[in-house]
Image 1 (cartoon, rainbow, N blue to C red):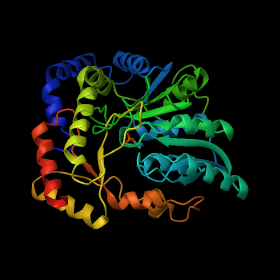
Image 2 (image 1 turned 30 degrees about the vertical axis):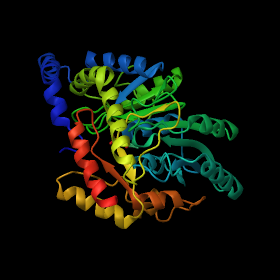
Image 3 (image 1 turned 120 degrees about the horizontal axis):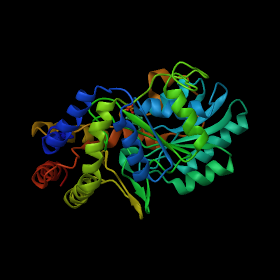
Image 4 (image 1 turned 90 degrees about the vertical axis):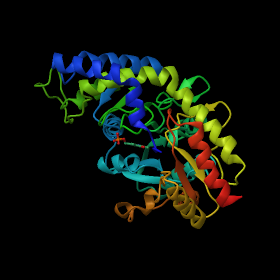
Length: 375
Ligand SMILES: *Cc1c(COP(=O)(O)O)cnc(C)c1O
């Protein structure tokens, strides 16, 4: 059994993907070929924003957003403690101070109460200037943007949606990557929409920021690549990756997103009765299911479950073992709010196989292991 079955996905889409990459090989326009702009247009239409700028990976996408906003030393940027390292790494990379915020036990996403608490405490201390919030759509579920947006407005903060795991998620009819002032995603192979290497994208409705990000991606170009008007970087999506993504986006829209949601429903039925906590999806929310993550009653039980699954050759992973504040490099970073939920989740979460090609029999085998151990 595969944790995320990319081989089966390739076998399904093989004819179309091979044709698409062969076309790029013959045209040899490996950088900035027409597939790149075509993909960007399709992604912008799907997400429902004006601009999509593709780039080299999801980490660069976040960094580009912070760069265009001029985030700098002395600024504070709020980020959930329970996330992948890159969400916080980019803040430190600009020289700004990451402020870790606790998450909600049920959704794993940033807690509005903890966020307000952290902002108030930073303001009270007066050492850093609050500038932005990075909200993460963890495991595919959009964060609570209605509440977060209100907080951003109250304190005049910019809102960045890290939808690296969130592509395909929705609140009402509105799609992930459209909830922030800027939204970003990643096309790392194991993400909901993955390419065959690294890739990422930035989404925004703001014309000025979009133009600036396009420049930042190509060495701060002005009129052309050899006219340089700002310090940027080299961060582009290859034409080959764009060609692959165009095929995969079609499958994602036609059936993949639907299938992961059906698989989640199956899991809920099968595992709900065994006593582990299955992921909550609030009313009106839709997840892209980057991960299917259950919560066990204790660390000891979680670790034992993982061993039992492994005995049956079922892969499982712990996302994440450490909160940001527990990472060695952030040890000295001051904490402005309690981070108890993150600490608890790090001990009790377990992510199970999840992808559009997961079979009902495989899910039954997994739930059998849970039933034996927990019931
Ligand atoms: C994967 C991920 C990123 C970084 O994306 P890369 O393409 O690997 O650079 C950022 N944030 C979150 C939450 C992620 O899961």
